[in-house]
Length: 126
Image (tube, rainbow, N blue to C red; front, side, top):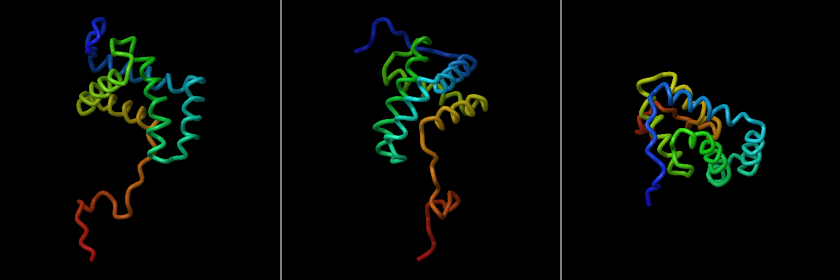
């Protein structure tokens, strides 16, 4: 199952910043912007359709960049990159910011329910 040529990519925090910036830049390339716009139009802001149309395009765009840094050119490579970035987010505010920008490129904005996040999950109204 494991690819013989692909070594696990181990990036420092500084390298992760560079790769994140490159991935974000790749989304603004004209051909990729068109691909993302078409995928979003097909999804019509429906979360199920976002997963069906937008996520695969976003994954392909990321794969094109991260493969140069030792990540496999498949969904698993993107997941490994995402886990690596997540591991640095708490330590490095710049990585957290870049990660947030990347997610905003392909995830729809989340709307909070009317009671807001401070409710703690328990509703006293009856």
